[in-house]
Amino acid sequence: MGDLKSSARQPISRLTAARRTDCGTSIEPSGPTPHFASSLALVPQRTLVPPVPPQQPPAPEPSGEDIALDIVFEDDDIIVIDKPSGLVVHPAAGHETGTLVNALIAHCGASLSGIGGVRRPGIVHRLDKDTTGLMVVAKNDRAHKSLSEQFADHGRTGAMRRGYIAFAWDQPNRPHGTVDAPIDRHPHAREKMAVREGGREAITHWQVQEAFNGRDGKPVATQLACQLETGRTHQIRVHLAHTGHPLMGDGVYGPHFKTKANRLGPDSRAALTALRRQALHAYLLALEHPSSGEILRWESPLPEDLLLLQRTLRAAL
Image 1 (cartoon, helix red, strand yellow):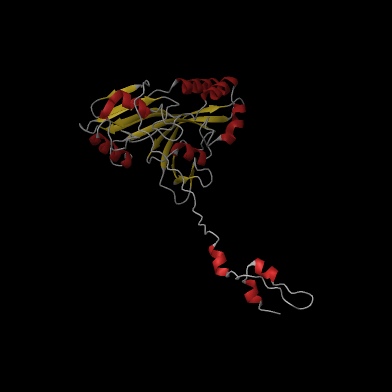
Image 2 (image 1 turned 90 degrees about the horizontal axis):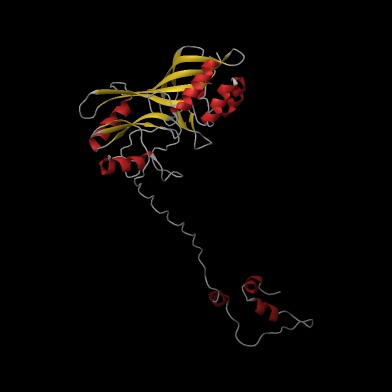
């Protein structure tokens, strides 16, 4: 019957030529039979190499841009500005230009502190794009170091204070309180933050300043004064949503509260629609001057969009 093992190792042409005839004789091919190993040598060997992803070009250094700044205070060490809504603090994906950093470079030139790197010169803290209010920027490395230490301490032992006015849905069941809940990245929506076990410590103190009723005469919104003891991303927004009182106008952390707008009076509802952002304003900033040690304090009035919301909410009382 022949050797199946050796037959299997012959080239296909050899096997075809050696098939037996009906009379039992074999037809052998003429000429030398090629060996299997040599036939393999005729097939070029290929090695698959995964493609190398193209290198991303380094992010360009920000340049100065002529963007108006509302300067509250400025000297050789620091500059305090009242940030408007819509202004991103520093360049990032999707916002390479038109930022506060671009405006500061144009205004201050090369004097800004370089500790934060070329993308964030002088920046020691941030406000969300659509949060208005007071920010301080370091104009030299000494000031940057001092301010960074003060922000890290968050007023536990020093003069640093950061206060916010927030307009939140519904009314808390007590006049003041503290939210002590760790914050980390949202497990599914990576652009959001969330209260999560094992997250970074986050503490927000709040106090009711004014409560507002809706058309039905029942509480619908509250004006809160908030003070931060830590400085996590979206901290006030996350903490207030966690307590069941998200910021009015916050489409990220309070979208399910949109139906509550139906309880507002027509003027309040129109003011909220025109707001197009979370109702949050950084109204208070206090710190120790990096050089003189003097305790400085600034307050910023509510911007026009929040003043309109406040007036219309009061008018419905």
